[in-house]
Amino acid sequence: MKTVRLTALLLAAIAAVGAAIHFGLGAAARAALPPASGFVLVAHGGAGDYSKMSTEQIEMRRAAMAKAVQAGYAVLAKKGASLDAVEATIRVMEDSGLFDAGRGSYYTREGVPEMDAAIMDGRTLSAGSVASLKHVANPIHLARLVMEKTPHVMLVGEGAEEFAKSQGIEMVSPYLFFSEREWQRYKNAKSAAEKADEKKSAGLSPSEEHGTVGVVALDQAGNLAAGTSTGGTVMKMPGRVGDSPILGAGTYANNESCAVSGTGTGEFFMRNIVAADICERVRYLHVSLDQAANDVVMKELVEQHGDGGVIALDSKGNVATPFNTDGMMTATVRTDAKITLQSWSKNAKPVVVSAK
Ligand code: ASP
Image 1 (cartoon, helix red, strand yellow):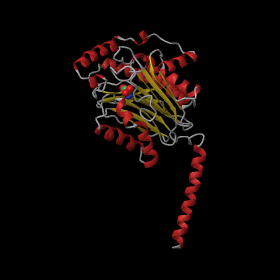
Image 2 (image 1 turned 60 degrees about the vertical axis):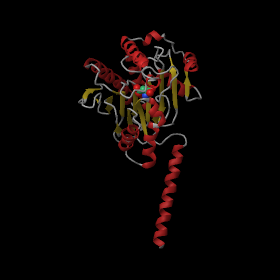
Image 3 (image 1 turned 30 degrees about the vertical axis):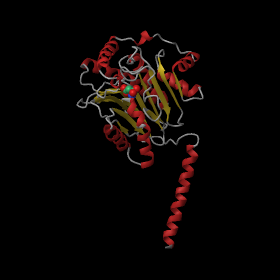
Image 4 (image 1 turned 45 degrees about the vertical axis):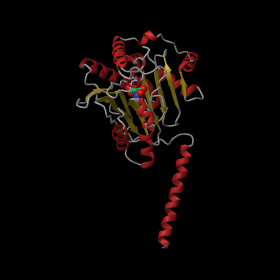
């Protein structure tokens, strides 16, 4: 009996010391242990149905992803912060015009893009997000400025663009976002919407292609970060905001659990707080990242017919990239500088290129 009580006391003491260390570190910044596996960066270029996309388009997107990830690799290799690597990678993808983000953004029902983005620091839980932008070429950069230069987390529409101007960001004409590809997509979607009912025309078709971009990274100091940038869904209503800029839905990072960026029909990601759910399963249920991400994307979302996928990364460098669509474009790079490009279609073989 005495031994039992003593053991219980000992266990309680160990738990108390553990909790003190935990809260001590957690107050200002989330604990970061240098990862045994060095640094890691994972990018996605959207989940959806790639079966109708031409080989040429896929090749172009693949090359753009490799270029973007090289930018992130360069930051991490020089011991830069995961937050900087996330922003650098996303900016290249926004500028490429090939994805549903920045210059390549899908159009709303009014035929112009409205862009959303968010970035989050897993070390401090600081975050910035923007929504409904019409004149900003790099929404991810503006999200970063919201995080660093304002007392707020999220700015939208006109207020966000006024803030952008105050920071010296050039307002670009909507023509910057014009492309024949997106104009055709818009015209096709518009005529399909005219034949369909209201709900479908709000961009809720599950088989649709998605080209949102997102990045998660773990730096050499052991800090996680996540970012996502998007033009949203095809033919969305003006003013519609998706999951990407909503912390815990499409974007989340916390050193104590994981970093996640999602892509898919945002309404499902918001209702299911997908990114936060994955991280909190890791944190409280102590399940592996792989199990948490798969349970949320392949079970919870599938049960509700919510289409999409995520890239998830934990502080040990474990990666999970489940998607319940035909494909999802991903690129992963680690300390060894090998970029693995994969999964634009479920049957596609991975391609490895160098980050140097
Ligand atoms: N999740 C994005 C949104 O709903 C779209 C996407 O990932 O393609 O705005």
